[in-house]
Length: 120
Image (cartoon, rainbow, N blue to C red; front, side, top):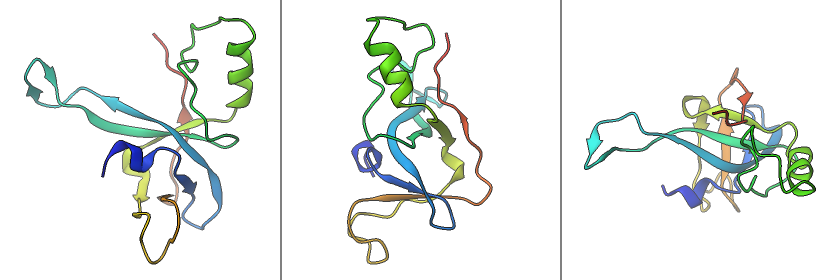
């Protein structure tokens, strides 16, 4: 699987209820060293209930300008949350017979929603 397989995928709870779309991925560099940096690991998915568009970097808590764009994107993405990768039950391939069409991410029962805001 590559990152673009997950971006813009529809996200469903275990019971089939739609909760949004994957708008970003969160990676961490905490693995073994691969050259100069640690190898990246997928930490979780950022899910937006209202839009399929990216935050364009405005998910950072200290970004306040340009004035009309920052508040507009925050409002547009209200309710966005982070789901840790272990809470993802299944990521079917787009050609999966059970889920024809675009890729769908299915979350585990009892998954937790975390704040998607990036803080310094």
